[in-house]
Image (cartoon, rainbow, N blue to C red; front, top):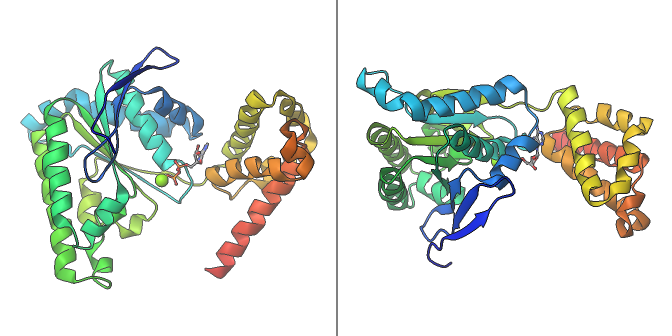
Length: 315
Ligand SMILES: Nc1ncnc2c1ncn2[C@@H]1O[C@H](COP(=O)(O)OP(=O)(O)O)[C@@H](O)[C@H]1O
Ligand SMILES: [Mg+2]
C-alpha cells in the first residue's frame, strides 16, 4: 500500500471527504468525517428510532462533555459497544454513527478503523507489541492531533474473555494481552477526552467483563422486528428499482406482502441478499433484471429461510 495520500472528494451533500490510504499496521481505514458513504449506511440500517437517537446522543455527549466530567471524577471511558447477532447492521451503524456524530458537532473528526485480524493474534498473545504500538502510538498520536472516532469491529478478538481463551492459548499470554489492551484503553481515555471508541461484537459472551464494564453505553441490536423486515424488503426493492425502474411495479403485488411476512427471523443482511439473489431466479431475469417478479422474490425469501433452518439444525 502507498503512504497516506490525501485525495479530496466532494460528497453529494457537499461534505469534503478526505480519504487517506492507511499505511499503518493494524489499521484498515482512515478518513475524515463527516463522510457521505457512512451517512448512507446510517440511513440504510432500519432500527427503532430511539436506538439511533440514544447512540447519537451518547456519542455527542462524549465530545461535548467528557473532559469536564472527568474534572469532577465522573469518568466516561469513551466506549460505546454494539452487540447482537451477525448481519444485524452493527458495523454499518457504527460507521454511520461516527459520521453523524461529526455532522451533529459541525466539526471534522478523524475516523480510524482497526483491522480485526490484527487484534486476533494480539489477543492470543502472539503480537502484543503490535497492539501496544497501535493503541499506544498510532491511535494516541491521531487523538493528540484532534477529535477521533475509532471503530473496533468484532472487538471480542481484542478484549477476549480470559476465562474462555485460556482453554486454547497459554493463559498467561492471554491475561497479559488483555490486561495490556485494557490498561492502554484506560490511558487513552484519561489523556484524550476527544476520543471515542465504537466497538461491535457478534459474541457478547466472549468479551472480557472488564471491557464490558468500561463501556459507557451497551446497545443490543436484535434481529429486525416484523415491521423492520418489511421495511428492509421494500427498501431493497426500491434500491433495485433505482437501477431497474420496472422492478418498482412488483411492490404492490400481494406475493410481496407474503414475502415480507416470511422475512421474520432473518437478519437484515440475509433479507437484502435474498432480494439480490431473486435476480438470479431464472436466466431470463438474470439477463434482464427489469423482468423480476414478486414470486421470484418470495421464492428467494423461502430459500433463505430454508437455508437458515438447515444451518440451525446442524448446530
Ligand atoms: N436492520 C437493518 N436494516 C437494513 N439493513 C440491514 C439491517 N441489518 C443489516 N442490514 C444490512 O446487512 C448488511 C450487513 O450489515 P453489517 O453492518 O455488516 O452487520 P453486522 O456488523 O451486524 O454483521 C448491510 O448491507 C446492512 O445494510
Ligand atoms: Mg460486523
